[in-house]
Image (tube, rainbow, N blue to C red; front, side, top):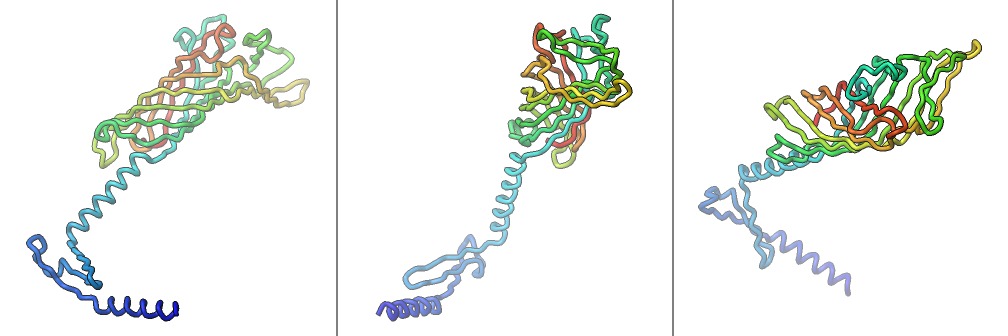
Length: 279
C-alpha cells in the first residue's frame, strides 16, 4: 500500500512539473519579455528575473571583494640576509682592552625568516599593520681566531690557548622572534610600489652554540659546544625595511645587550643587509 502511495505521489509531482507554465512578465525595469519569466508549480509561482548586466556586475563585485579580502589577510614569507655585529658605547671600533672581541664582519652573518600577515589595512591600503613569527640566527666570528669563549665564574671571558691553532671559531645565537611592523606603500598600488616598514622585533634565545675547527698536536678537530654563554635570554630590536617589489634593504638595532648585565661588556647587536619578500 505504501509503495503504491509513493508511486502515485511521484507521478503527480512529475505531472505537475510537465504542466508547469512559463510566462513572460514585461516590467518598466525589465522591458524585454525575455528578461523575466515565471514557472508555476501547482499554486506556487516562481519568478526568474535575468539581467545579464546586473548579474555580471554583482558577480564581479563579489569576486573583487574576495580577492581583496584574500590579499588583506594572506600569509607571506620574508627572508633577511645580512652582516651581523655589535657596538660598544655606540662605537663600532672597540677600545684597546676589548680588542679580543673584534669581529670578522665578512663572516659574521644574520639570517632570519619570518611568516608575516600581509597588510592588515589601517588607511586606504596605504598604511597597514603586519605581525608575524619566525626565527633568527646571529653568527659572530671573531677576527682573532685564537680567541675562545669561556663562562668561568659566571662571567664571559675571551681566552687564548697557545697549544691550539684555530682555523675557525664562532658563536651562534638562535632566536624565536615575533615581529610587529607598520608599513607604508608609496606610489601606484596597481604596479610595483615602494614599501617602507618600521617596527619592533621581540625575541627569545632558544639556543647558543660555539663551533670550532682547530689543530692540536698535528691532528684536526671539530668541536660544537652548547651553552648559554650568559647571552641575554630576551631581546628587543628596532627594525626598518625599504623594498621595491620582492627585494629591499633592512637594518636592525637592539635595545638590549648581547650578554646579560654585569657578566660581560654591554655589547649592542645590529644587522644590515638584504630582505626578500613583499608586504
